[in-house]
Image 1 (cartoon, one colour):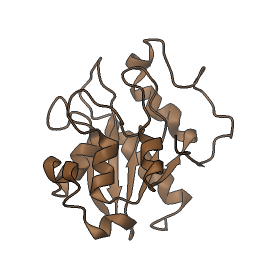
Image 2 (cartoon, helix red, strand yellow):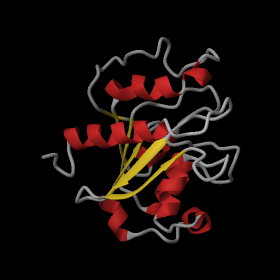
Image 3 (spheres, helix red, strand yellow):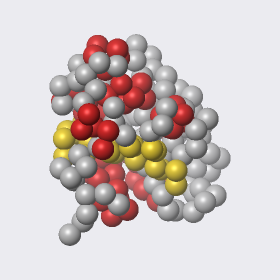
Length: 187
């Protein structure tokens, strides 16, 4: 049995997010990302993937909308549910800190929702935007864990974008601290 929290559960749910990312309609201008929002007891609250309901949708945004947090309430910081403080959002890519398709980036939506923990497979490479969502979340007190051992699976889904030549880390095949989970430091 997999416990509701811990390394095995993190791996399981992050693999589910990566699987969801494969459902994204193809795009040459946006990442394919999957997200799974899991309650403290291990139950799935919602899921989402990029472009699931509209061309500009981000995975985290879709998952939050499915639990009834409208964008305007999330952006204003209203509508945060107390039970989300113990929830974990699993995303196949670092939540965005800068966004051109909507006025509020996913890192800000997560902060406004009250979610207490985020687990990601990899940091957003500077192909479409500068990244920085994980640092923004950490600076606000959200626990952010990166699982680089699963990054290659998330990158594989986005190979067409990475072929543009720029990546966050030269070579982007390993991390200096090895394949295990690591806490992403604040910027």
